[in-house]
Length: 205
Image 1 (cartoon, rainbow, N blue to C red):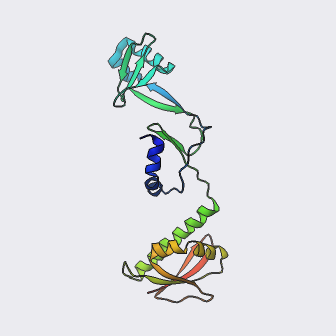
Image 2: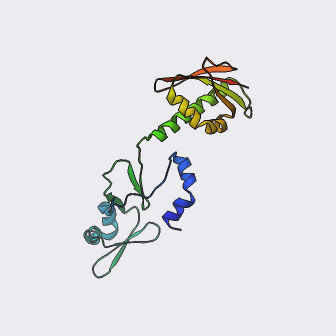
Image 3: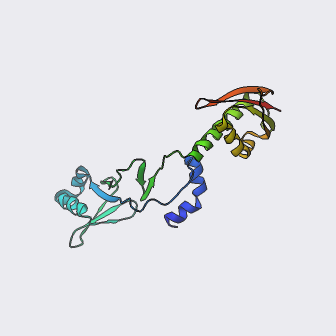
């Protein structure tokens, strides 16, 4: 199974584990070169006078992958020397971009741009956590479904509540959501704030 197939098969798990929205192919303009860096002090104890040649041919790229993370260095006559993973380090040229890393031949770059969609989703998740804390403080049973009433003058928060109402219903076991023009009442009332925008929330069993 190649890397593309692996990513497709485990895409949902990867996105959930590291909290990312989408996985796409890396920009083909990004070029990374693998560099062999032998550890001279390790090699000299094993190969003596041949150490210099091993380093020389390794830098020339006379390398091939062996088994169990071994590296095989060969000269122009195809004489081979096998190095264990403790005998060398691997570096990569071309990782000048921010938020990019490589491991086990896989290159990954994080796009940290906060789009408006991601910003609204983040607020919705903050509201979800806030609601579950309210449920805990109200001592609701784990499976109790509740009514949620809220009041806010923030058009942005109203849009978030409308867009993500199904998500909030599932995450906080809410069976009904209503917007009030006056301060809502319930078993517990609390003030949620996000970026200086405020919303009063009431839960009632």
